[in-house]
Length: 115
Image (cartoon, rainbow, N blue to C red):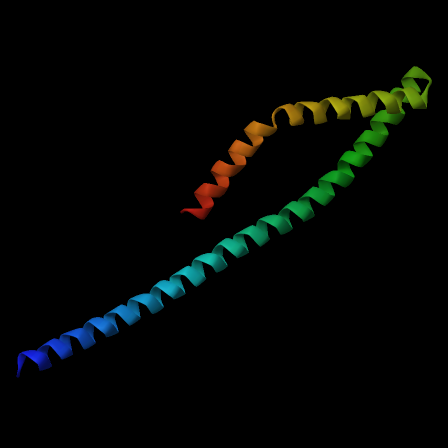
């Protein structure tokens, strides 16, 4: 066997190995993207379902709290204002802590993404 035939055979094997590597890398990337997409969609679906039910529950709790406070103070409007003010304070605290929430969210998502 001549040197050129041996070199040709070796380069052909290297080419085949390289093509298989590129193909398997492509498949891995596709699977990783699919995994991340399904995890994100699953999380989004759970957030909508659970969030919707929790929202309805909070709506009823807020309404009953406003009615109870209004009955105790003999003013339904004052009860509604107190409950609205409490929600405003909660929203203000969440707004002030938004950077911590962002940081925690980024940490969690980077752990899921780069795992």
